[in-house]
Length: 119
Image (spheres, rainbow, N blue to C red):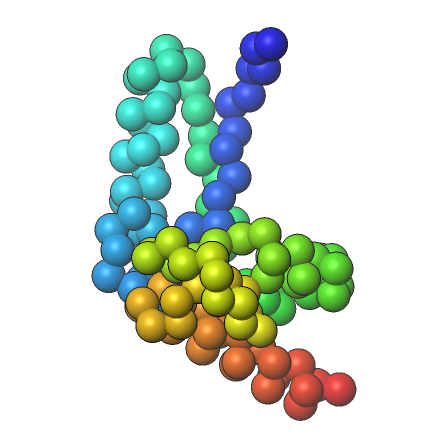
């Protein structure tokens, strides 16, 4: 089965860059060009989270889908650059020590505090 899709959507975010070049806007733009050239078709990579931080990402998820979407992100998405899926934290799976996990944890905690203060 062949599906003709021309838009990819990803959760990459440069605002809380953790030292990994793959989440930078310039990298994503370069990947978009490379995919288009390799496939011989226009491909767009959308990154709606690129310029918001992790706490804003959690807030947006809650705003768009409530507890169900937040829980889906916690259970199904992955941030850890060490690939750890055995350790489950309030903010999701990960080693808890790599820069990506630390950013996700800090963002989660900041969002939880802000949410509690709002009501």
